Length: 163
Image (tube, helix red, strand yellow):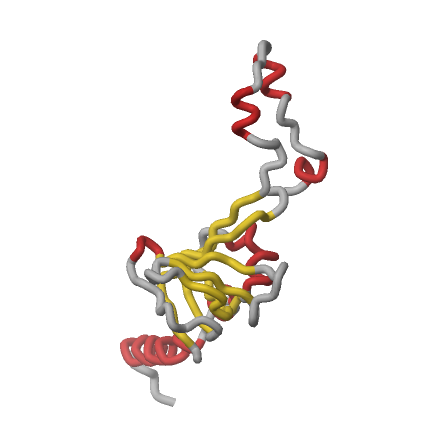
C-alpha cells in the first residue's frame, strides 16, 4: 500500500471535521427553555446565553417590552418580562397571543425576606450590632442558595415570531 502524503491527510481530516462540526451542538445550545423550566434553572443559567420559547401575553404600546408565558396566561400563571438588550430593537406590538422564540439571557430577582426597607431606614437604631442583626434571614433562605424567586427579566438579543 502506498504511503499517504502528510498534507493530504491533514487536509482530509480538516475537511471532515468542518463538515461534521456544524451539526454538533452542546446541551445548552440544543436546549430550548420555556418560562417554567427557565424559572426552575435560573440559578444555573442566569447571565448565560439561552434560547426561550413562549407565548406573548402582553406588550408595551411602544414595543419596548413584552411579557411571555407558557401558553395563554391565566391568573396566577408564571410569566416573565422581556426587554430588548440595550434597547437594540422594538417588539412587534401586534403579536399578542403568538408564539415567540428568543435568544438572550435571564436575570432573576429574589424575594427580600428582611421586610420593608423604607420602614427599616426610618426606625431608630442605637447599636450597630443591633442593626446588623435586625434583618436575619429565615432558616429556609439561609439554607437555600438564593431564596425564593420573585421575578425574572429576559434580555433578548434575537427574536423570531413563530405564528
